[in-house]
Length: 298
Image (cartoon, rainbow, N blue to C red):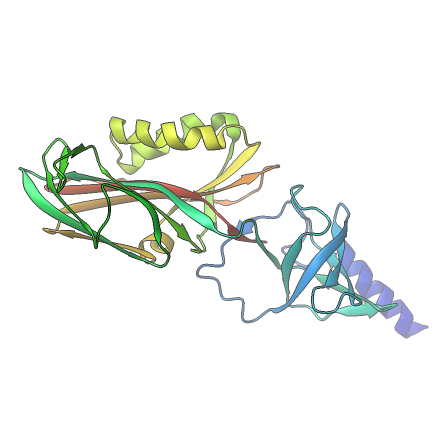
């Protein structure tokens, strides 16, 4: 009788989420830079979703059933697969394994696109400039055509003349990628407030009016109709995975890359601290973004 009472008490604790980190809205975190080695994990398929927990079966053994304490976003549906990370001992009652999720990992898409990164070159005088990229995954589009790099003549106003003799406002590229972006800090913004938010932050980060307008014209139509957008401006998660080399070496380089996830409801997230940029001498400016294809929810 005492043993059964203890089991019931343990299940109750799991369901009410007494331990820190339980309850409330799930907060997206990134796999990038996170050490999940201390957690056990299991790959599951959702069978039923309730307000504070969901039931699931093991992908490896569909006869093994789970009751998982953890609130899911409304975008989740029965049949979705996910990975649950937990560090409490499971409780098994009537052949059902009860666990409390610490993190939930889910792939939203098969891949993600590094969309419309564009590179502006502003030398102090007309200069022949060579630009190369190093990243995993193929370039899916480039203008001018990327052939082991770009070599162009750049002018102080940003005008570029390619090896084909054509004039370009910037170097354009896109690529497929499996980069896991850092969404541990950022901003949760209502869809309709996204244009004003982006203009404010991009200006603070150092984009000029032309660059800011180009960014907004591309990204806002993809984001404004979302209920909310979780937005994080990437640093090392992007620059360590997409290496940019410019010769001659510029005096100042600004790389603004936005990762975002559309949300159906608001979440609490640590506000990202952004740093302003000062242009000096030969300046290179890049902007781009991606709809994040993988996040870990806490």
